[in-house]
Length: 175
Image (cartoon, rainbow, N blue to C red):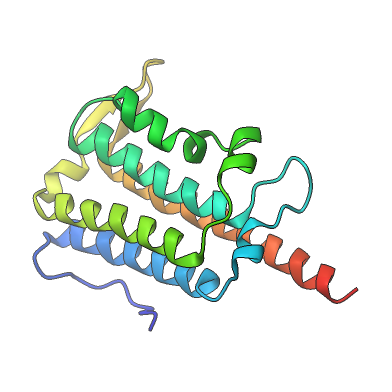
């Protein structure tokens, strides 16, 4: 059941608890949107340059994993991590070939595994961590709060793509 409240979460500081509440709501809506899809629907490509729903779900997990490594462990992805997540991070031609033939449980498990680690790591942080500032290579400032907002923003954007693909699927079956 989807909770439509941003609430404090036990075992988290106030602002991190609110962030966790938003992350959980975002994920609950995504799961509600995709939980009944078949493998064929997950693999459907609207055209030769589109991504499948399965690839978009893989991407959502990959983005969150990369944020975990970069901002909890303060390092770049290792070569083996990058190779494991490359198709999900980059999408495109190779992802269209390789991210398919998996049931919904595969994607749900991947999303859950990555999210569980995020929640575990966020329990170890204080609100002040959210406001720690860093700079991109071009000198533009950002903070950890923004980066976790971006994790949600990315998922919400791709959920919009998933909804569009589902509409295309529905229209293609009604012809």
